[in-house]
Length: 261
Image (tube, rainbow, N blue to C red; front, side, top):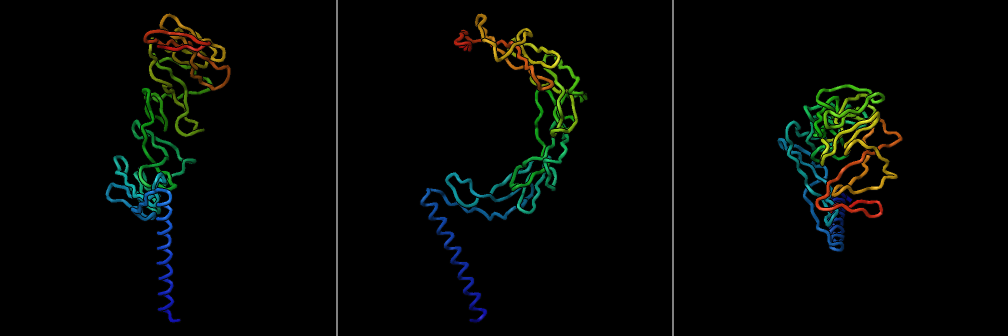
């Protein structure tokens, strides 16, 4: 058989296989009630200006085939494309979460995470608004804007003036960077911030309690519960604080559990 005939036969075989694959997909789609979508090739990964364009398998919820995905990169990110990925990130180089050291981008935290776009199995540097309750980014984590260093073994929780502060590790686990941070937002419903040697939190008058034995009670239309306090060093004994919950119309108790109405 001539070389031309062999090539023609091989080409016909490839065409036949492609047709069979299409028929199988269509048959599966018809049998399962799925919609066939074929918007792109899975190898597609590119930037069109500040738009990341990629291709992924259809979501499987009533679809088979491929779907094109796009993401418009907003400042401070830019579009970067490589082998199998097109993403909105701060850097063109993928990062490793196991070794990445978090840092600050103003009030935001720069982490090694999953960016917008088509990242495949890669992680990239992204800026995330992780800090709340009055904290901002310091030392790669969320702490007081004053950036106060602390020792978790000796730090005593404080109320500043009505929000609890604890000594927390900044950034990734085992970073060794500790800063004073607001643990929560301001206390509400007439409760106030109270602290002890290793704990702090919101409570009605600072009375401590044990959630395992505490029986909820009503004081007029106010339900009194025992809520876990935040602890500086997470170790027993675990402390709770009596917490007041104002009820709109009435408070009732049934088998030790309170209900507000």
